[in-house]
Length: 140
Image 1 (cartoon, helix red, strand yellow):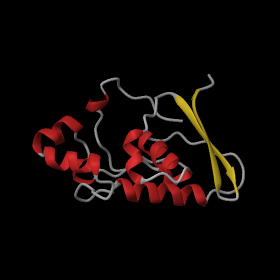
Image 2 (cartoon, rainbow, N blue to C red):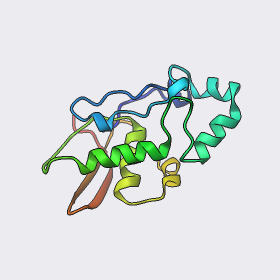
Image 3 (tube, rainbow, N blue to C red):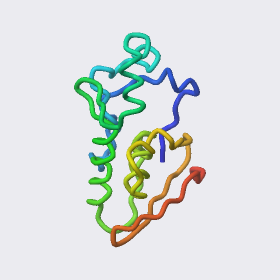
Image 4 (tube, helix red, strand yellow):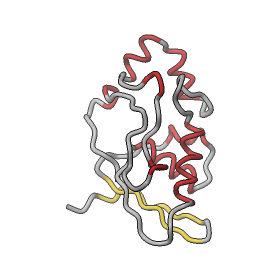
């Protein structure tokens, strides 16, 4: 599941990897020196860095992690899950990274995936093969 966010998504502040209790590898992305700032604030100061971050999966803000590193971390966490059902409320970027990993997509696909807030994304699989179910409403 993804956490709800303010409709003005560009006003969300970057973090240092929001925790995911019980699933350390599924914590949010670490934005390094951008943490605590909005995308608009960072873009106003260094538009070239933001452009690079959005187009180069290997680029990371100083002290932060790249999209490639996020995908690897999330993939490792998924691979390490014990058999059974696991539920985690995670950052939208973690959902993107999990889908990219599970479907063996190129890292550049990360930014092409839109994850709707307040929905459930389900990955199921066995023997290293994943299936994806997206856009389920949260049961209330």
